[in-house]
Image (cartoon, rainbow, N blue to C red; front, top):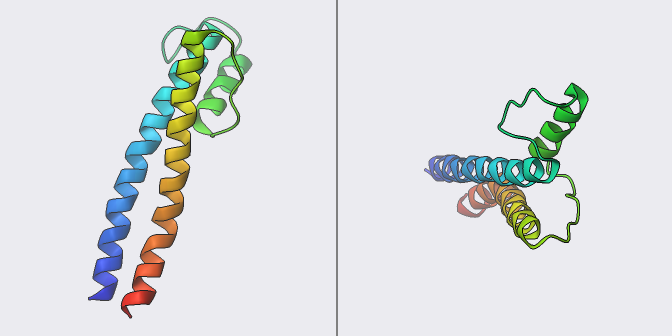
Length: 105
């Protein structure tokens, strides 16, 4: 019974983490594409290396540039906030079921 509870909690937390990861991708893409002036997800303008760099900044939660514009700053804050939520959720997803299993054993 304890393994079932731990497994179900892991799957629920994994679904929440995946939803937060998708939200993180959207927020980071919105900020970076607005900052760099790119249009759409598959923009053909500009160099392919620049587009690849933008995609890597979207996928991997690395430090975002600091901006002074109010609109861009709000987009950046939103992207940073969802990145933090995703990292916390990932940590909880990986540790909570193990702790729960050990406590219920």
